[in-house]
Length: 114
Image 1 (tube, helix red, strand yellow):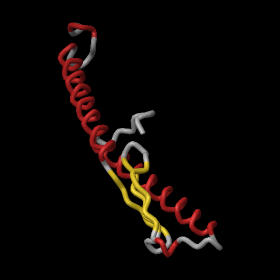
Image 2 (cartoon, rainbow, N blue to C red):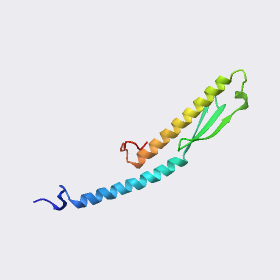
Image 3 (tube, rainbow, N blue to C red):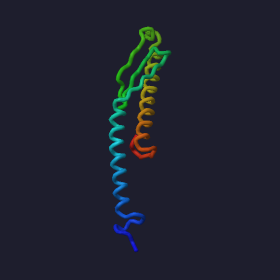
């Protein structure tokens, strides 16, 4: 005899439990996304001569350059340090966000989430 609802193994009761679980995960994801926006990551380059702080929304909050890093004869080195620090800060924010989102999804890989 078929169970009501046409779903094997529990019918609509299982569907209701799945919907509750999906709603809970959606709420946790929304919370995680808000937390990620407020995260920040600081990276340095050139032995701390350049510091960059990136936010969870992948924007740069600040760049601090030690005056000793400014050499008019070697602008390329300063450019390289800024670039390295920016890239490291953005990588750090991305890694922190991925960790937080993974925790929110229980480790499930949801395409397009990050």
